Length: 596
Image (cartoon, rainbow, N blue to C red; front, top):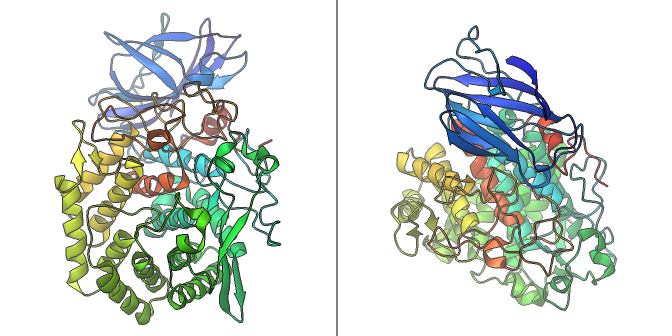
């Protein structure tokens, strides 16, 4: 790494070239304010094209002249405050240079050859530096994805809470029914804990770790993945009651939606217990919920595979509970939204439960390799699912999960045919899948981005593990890049990633005092949150307003599929996470964990 220090009237500045590859390099600036700097701007010269900037707004003035300025809470800096923007520079194979500020030209890195082993100073403590071959720093996007999971935690957050504006919340959940139900995740922009989407989210998040464990370790995000999954699975273990080795009850919801309950209170998670009654709801033999029980089984089974070799005792516990829940799901059949009225209309079981029975058995086969589970998965898919349409993996739809797993594990070519027919619909824009002018594959009016993210993940997974097809890989790459900012608006649908991202998201925790002001900037940056996205097959149909829950709400089931797609992008194209120092400089984040 080459480093030069300069001074100017505003900042003490440190310029570092932290990665260098054929055709470009990564440049880090360390900027420390020498005095209070309101609405600051900084000019510099660099005789190359800057293809991406992270942490600042960048204006290309032409002829190698650039201006940078602060974003959001960093538009004005106090004396001593530091930021560390990153730039991706295209040098066309020439010598890497650091910027010229004022009239002080920093020396070219003439003695440093093109790196064959990239420098590691820019990565997280456990990661390895990987040259960025794609359009975005996918490791950074993944790293920020996990910050969202922390921000949406319920319960006692502990000393390692990295979100400075979050504190313990809803720690008495379950007290109305005499059961400890503290923990887990708030579903979306509200503070209800819905079991169905939570299980779907943990299942999808763990899945990416199971399939791409080495990439997670290389990215330095494996520990964050384990912690995010465990926060969910610990809650599921609390929610699962057994008797004589069999499931007797599963608590599937805490809190209620609707304006008379949670949705009627716009405030911080730390205060919601003071304003709403946190009722808890369960399924049992007399009130079955095959879909939510089988889906929770899938979450626990996939997590058991993730923890295998890390904590085998915990993995065994997860797998045992998964088997019990699946047996319960098979024995007492019925839709959980018929048994738990409070789940409606938010997570009504529109698709029935055949898909969850198929995917639950498929996951138990992956975790145990017991032939009986594979037989069940094949049978349930053929008799209760039938075939794949033009949708994708989602909170209430797991036919596509089952199809891909069966294509991986079954000897029956029927399942490969089903998956390839479905993927071809997405790749070619058939049926109800419509491409925008900017290249986004649109299927869902509500939550278009997570539906497409899930398809991207499954397409790339199929390419990687079943049948290599460049069309599937290209589709996945194009869709994820669109989501991260390669679109006609140059807009990132991930909060806090890139230089142009949502400012007024539908999320109470990050804007507790802005419920009645739909265009006021968020009080806190909800790093990594994935918004719903374009409402129609129109690149301009996204609405950055707090009162638009269709396009601008966020949630764990939105973040999970993108996380799994991002680790694939990192695996294929690299792009480091932020260093601990850079992470610590993000507004509202303490990399060492303090919270409030």
